[in-house]
Length: 114
Length: 114
Image 1 (cartoon, rainbow over the protein chains, first blue to last red):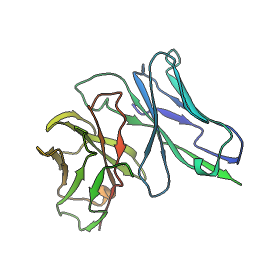
Image 2 (image 1 turned 180 degrees about the horizontal axis):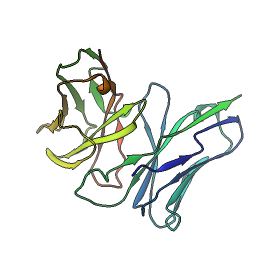
Image 3 (image 1 turned 120 degrees about the vertical axis):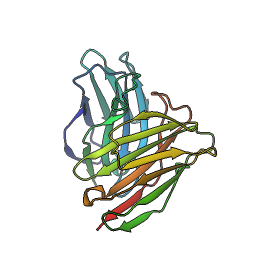
């Protein structure tokens, strides 16, 4: 079951803030966030486990709301280097069915303009 | 540079043919994952191996198979290729292959089926 990301695309000026949401219809075990620049491989940003914790690296942070089955990625004071497509990947726990393994959303394209 | 290597970088072949994609994980990582990224399907998990054994299976077609060798490198075999198999194929590796591991992606192999 593919998580739903919103918005699908966003354009910001340098220095502005952005929030990208990732919602699931099933109870989440973990959420992974990746950024992918055009023509390159996804790059890991962070993993969040159920429990509502918030994580962050400098100006990029994320939260996990277990009750809402949702994670949000926060980018503050955006820089040109933040441009790319952001994917959330969700996992629902240990399973032998395999297709419950990391399932990616369709991505949010972030464009930062000077 | 994630430390994960994939060869070849590009592959062009014809329908009905068979190809092998190769992946070498980061030093010390025991688990390898394969993903397919196409324009219409997004990023999809195919299969995971841990220390030579299949750990999880996702949306992998029967025409596709993979294995992980004793030296931990992995190969993804795609046979009876169809036009729709054209995509970017990523390999990722992680230390223990558990849900909360960070996955490091290789640069990908772009497969074009004509």
